[in-house]
Image (tube, rainbow, N blue to C red; front, side, top):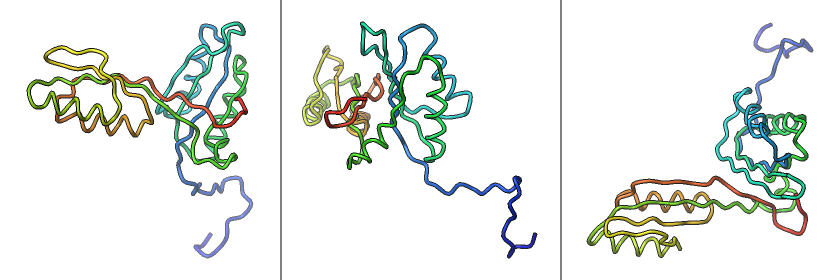
Length: 190
């Protein structure tokens, strides 16, 4: 085939996908039983999909249901494939792409929040500066000694990233982040 010919209907011709890679937040309602999380996560790892954030918690105690929130990246077709494969796992009740639903509702993104614990060492002038900056970010002091602070900060991941970047030169020691919890605006549930 020369460069000016169009490909035939051959099954061997596969067009390259030109769609942009996007970050999406998926909400997965599952039975709260042993092994379910491993099966869901196994689907991602087995197919080479990366998980950027993962949170899991029981949300309906009487019904024994848990909600898994996963942030992953891919092209729209890959994300649709992930969703379809998740829906085939037996203990999965529902999979909602919160990013797509937010767009359908005329919103940019679903409501997303994360909690982080941030330990910062500091004495003298840096101690006072650390407290001023933490106050500007509405971070709460949840533990303090004469040598360190542990702050609790809640917000979008970008806010937490900014807080961490500002605390690095002031004596950042340790970070623990929960991962993203998310839901769409409006009266409609998952």
